[in-house]
Length: 308
Ligand code: PAF
Image (cartoon, rainbow, N blue to C red; front, side):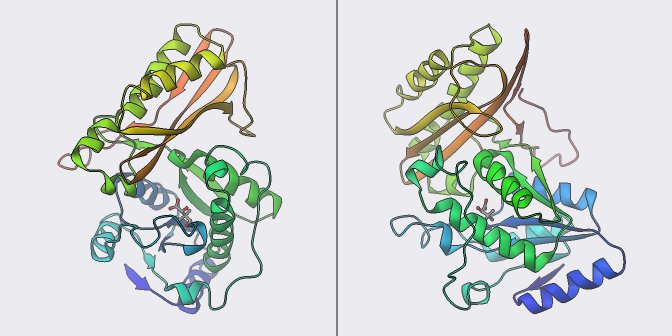
């Protein structure tokens, strides 16, 4: 694996791979890798010839009151993890390399960014789409891999790529959970032990909502009450939102039918955590996707059990 800091060197290596007929796979990240990041790298490794991972904590997607300075960083650990996943290039630019001058050109996806996380983080997705568009332009991937834990981000990036005719396939990969259900996130590092225990209420609430839907509940208000009722039992967890929305355009639904995203966000101690599940309901058939449990690191070849 080569670690590269300059856009010029990155372009050169990606150009050479494409000229030799190779497909470039890309995993954009902000580092502090966990099993979720590693699953994206593994997917890229399985599909493409040159795997590029970016490691860049993008200031543009943090509001002034957010955790840019505190965001966890572990450059050496990240390099070791990426190398172990067979990554070819770790692109770890400085802020000046990505933004040599404050950008006056930004990318904004309307509509999809208005609700869910966009409501409490109104500038966040503009920062995400701007940096992802720049990274796509630097790397030139044929496929780019994003986790479904950031379901709104995935929908927004997909729409950006479609609207701008970017020649990249945006691939959504399963949300990865800890064995006790907590969705993996670099921000879990902020959790004190009591908060860490309390945070599992988010996945427990989603599971309770899934059980109601499997049992025949179709009223979104009812599912919302189940979610918020359970989350409210944990005083350490302050709910930001719990919503039932259409999976394609993220608009609120009243009835659970077709493809629906059930998404939650909450403050737990210093962390703001998000979690979600997708539910597909056709006639009496219900399929719930809560993601997968991280493989046991001591048994790396074991299959990942689905927690559907
Ligand atoms: O999901 C993330 O880690 C970031 O939002 C991304 C896509 C790397 C852009 O900075």
